[in-house]
Length: 317
Ligand SMILES: [Fe+2]
Image (cartoon, rainbow, N blue to C red; front, top):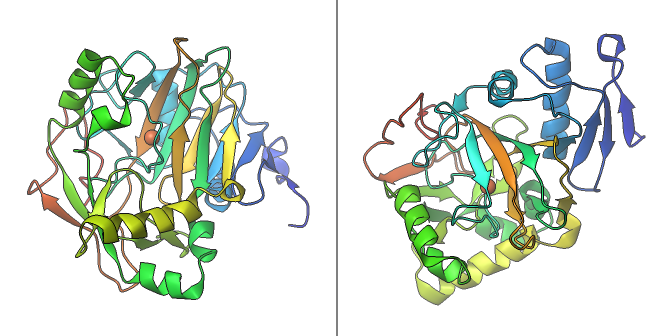
């Protein structure tokens, strides 16, 4: 399409897709999200999502835990977080300002398990009067933008991801008790997973850099060599031209392709309340350029959560 705005066919005549950034992000208008959308509308949303990596919807205030999950089912199978209990006893995960964990590190959700989520669907309930924006980065264009020798190097590497890292070092201003409690829950099972550094996307065929703050080190390297390479690749992901920044309003929904993005929650809304709900959709086991799949190093298998199936439990490559 040559225009930035595309109009849908007759059965979904109100649906429009408007790009926000050149490399990532689009606003979809004219859709009331829920479990009752037509297959044609769902297909259009999925196409826009795969193309733009993150899509935004305003004015979805009608959604609750149930209809949020019902909409999620149209994109795949909802999964529970491997360690953090849900907000509603089912799949909806609380992303709230009153716990010790803030996502102000670039990351891809749940990469410490092999089959981490394909999509995350985040719904804004309470938004602070200022700050609290979220940034997303396109990990496919980050890979494409690498000079050829660095692409070849990245293609050959694997990295170890874990949910067990130094939380206090990342959040020096957090209340120690809250942080300790959050870490205890988040790491109640300690996961180690080895992923390829370049993942071939199962739906688009694009190559994506697979890194973020759950990475401990590049496999086969230690210390300074690993950190230097991680910083190098990560700097290409975080370049401003490669990102989009979203200023939330209550009732907004953002859906991102978690296999092709990293994101960052900006922690700059002081003590104001911020409350969102996330439903995640099951992914598959990543495959590298050489055809090798990701492997779970420990524990032996992803344990069952208190409800449903856990993210990462899927064994399909
Ligand atoms: Fe996240």
